[in-house]
Each structure stands twice: as structure tokens, then as C-alpha cells.
Image (cartoon, rainbow, N blue to C red; front, side, top):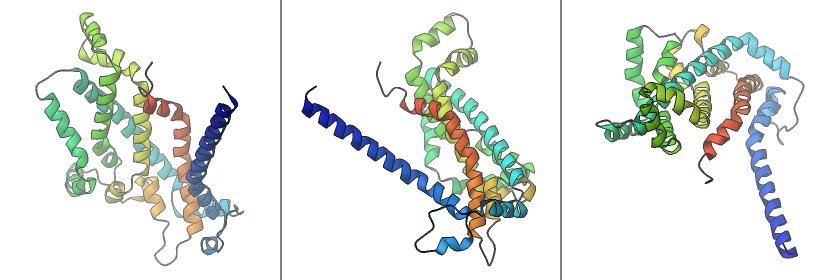
Length: 280
């Protein structure tokens, strides 16, 4: 490689790293600023220039959070709901995705189009009928009210169907049938091990979505004992005075679990998103 080529390569590579570092800083800044305000007093919100250095009041603000809400109880509730919904979505969506991708039955395409069509219906339109159904079951103020309605979703079915259709060759399915495997055994022993990156990606997306869900839990969970963390944080807002430092300290602590989950599964998440992008 000549000198000009080396310079172009170096400039291009440096520009790429500068761009990536800049995007990373911009992405992390809101989280950092949340910690800054959460470690100062509320007056830091209105300071000009704004505070950029963490203060010494984080533990004091955290204690206020613990005094005002059942923080750890809400964290446990959110973890239970998010975990149950994630496991349910991974099982049912992967099973439905396998059926749509590899099992030929009458109305396959029409039913799949219908499932995809439900993604265009705003969630808010289903709140009233969903509330009426949950009320009939007697699940108001019960965690089942925020688990069962989210047990399967159209996006998960679409994601798994597309992934299985491209990642699992028909010959592999046929070989399993020749060996006497049932459709469920083919799904369990052949399909699932082959689509682990897609499973990890869908699981992470689902867990984060359910953890951050606010509207539906607000409607059906009135009792403080069953509050999820997002609903519990909402109760920190006072009617006449808002302690922003306390609120952001609680929000910062509530964000840590989801960051840990993302870091643990980030490798599988990236593998699932990039699978098939490079032809081997």
C-alpha cells in the first residue's frame, strides 16, 4: 500500500472512531446528567450554567426514595413481570414463527398478514376492552394483569418467522421428519438451538420494553404492593412540590438493572441483529 493509501486509510479510520466516540458520549450523557442531578439538590436543575459535576447528596436522595416508596418491592415486581413476559414471548413467538415459516397449512399467509396487521393498531385503543376483560377475571391489582396480556406479541412472531425462514433450511426439517420427529420435537431439538441469537435479541427487546411499560400498569395496578418500578417512581411527584433530585436518583437506580441485563446479553443481541448481514 502506497503512502497516499495509508493516509486515506488512517484518516478514514480516525474519522470513524471520532464519530463513534461522539455518538457514544451523546448517548451516555442523559444517563450521566441524571446521576449528576440525583447527587445534588433540586436547585441544581435550575442553575446556569447547569451542573456537570456529581455532588455528594446521592445517598441522601436515595434514602428519600426509600422513605417515600417501596423501591425494592417495586423492583422485584418489575423483575417478575418482565421475566415472565419475556419467557412467554420467547416460547410462543418462536413456536408461532416456526409454524408460519416451515409448516404449510391452509391460510398460512393470510393468517400471518393478519398478525402483522395487528401491529398497526395503537395499543391505546385496546385499553378499555382489555380492562373490562381483566376486571371480569378479577385480576385488577394482580401482577397477572400485566403478564397475561403481553404473553405474545405480533412483532415477536414476525421477527422469529423471518429469522427461522432464512436460518433453517427446509432439508433440515425434512431430515427430522424422516427420522420420525414430530413438529414440536423438530422445533425443540432442531430449530431452537439454531436460532439462539434471534431468541437473545427478542428476549432483550421484550425485557426492556416490559420493564419500561407505564400506561397499562398504571391502569390496572392501583395497590402500592403490586406497583412496578415505573408506577412507583411516578408517585414521587408531589402535588405542589417536585424534588427533582430525589426523582432522578430513583430513576437512576431503576435504570441500573436494565443496563446490567443489556451488558450481559449485548453479545447475543449484536449477533442476532447482524446474523446474515455477511455472506460466508
